[in-house]
Length: 317
Image (cartoon, rainbow, N blue to C red):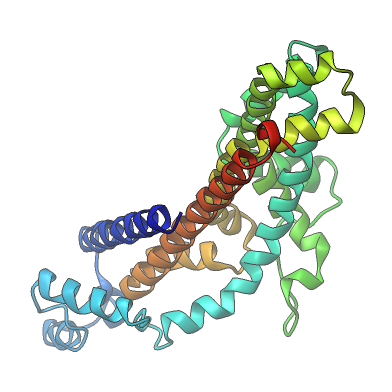
């Protein structure tokens, strides 16, 4: 297990290194640059040149990349063009993002877990067919389309929720459930379809195995049979849940921007619009590292469950 974990961690670090090069290259080819944003439209050529030198943009790209990745490795994500540290901005925005991400993840876990297990135990039934059709539509819909649909329903047709998250000064977003409801529901719908289908497939596959049939033939019913199936389907299902949680980070960029949630995703969109390159790079690396950490945690938990099951009598508990 230690060797496996070392290999997986090394792969995650290598992936993050490749991501850093991709992020740096992508910010290099963005139209416009930080000089134009900082100097303004009326600046002279001499003023623009001075700003370019002060920002270090007169140096070759490979030198700037080496310096930047060295700072990142030491935990320094750089300084935004606003003068604030990127790490400080992330800390300020993290609470708002978690206020939306956590309820969305809980909704997905509860609904996808319950419905996925039920459909997997009754493959081909009316509920299974209905859920397959519904989730297929959700999987084929973008986060932007789902969020826009919710906006139309709950702010125009049935105006019971606010369209944007306008947090009162001095308050935190989590203190206002009405502001969290729509963005969290939009994120949950975006991740529910794929997660439920993965859980349903895992449970159905487990229920069709020989040991599950043996349990049924021996009169195992009710909660005991449910535990037998679910416990053995948990390891592969964890991979799906980890992918879902990682996917929520990407979906949050769209949802936070659309609903004006003052989180990390919204800040990334603003940074791209204002060509705040240090902030774009720092936020992108943070989101990438968080995604890899979630996937690694999912793989580790799944491996531990497989190991536990392998040491249990007859492979089950």
